[in-house]
Length: 184
Image 1 (cartoon, rainbow, N blue to C red):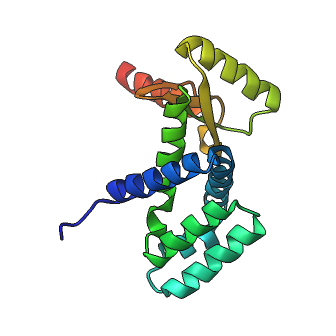
Image 2: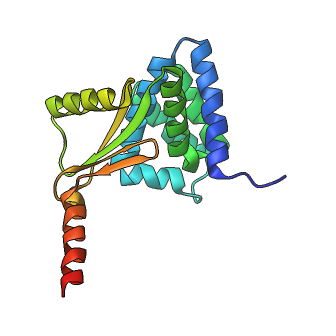
């Protein structure tokens, strides 16, 4: 059997979950669960080790993921999906599955996805202003995924599709450094 790439695997699992969630009218609940799980993965080194560890047995990974899903009070469909992914040793592809699912949901709703990385956490007012600006620029609803990267020093980086706007202080300082080298 030919080897499948992680992206293809993630897309297949995400499509299956999307179809099941749509059939059970649970798209919003599952999407909420996956967004919570995405945040957990981003913030927890232990969870990342669980997802990527080939040393753990399937049953151990399954029990750990089931405990996590119970503690987070995930929808039954999400719990079953995570159990299936663990039993097939595909937990390392879970972040890609989450992205593919959320992308499919945004496409169904006619939304554009934007990834925003800022130097500090945005307040709710700042986030609302950003979303309305992006909505006006794109001409459609925008689903925003916000992250924090202190190495940016200030400002933010916004990616919408293949377009990127980098207004970070880090990038501006790098451009200034290059300009200064060219002068001498």
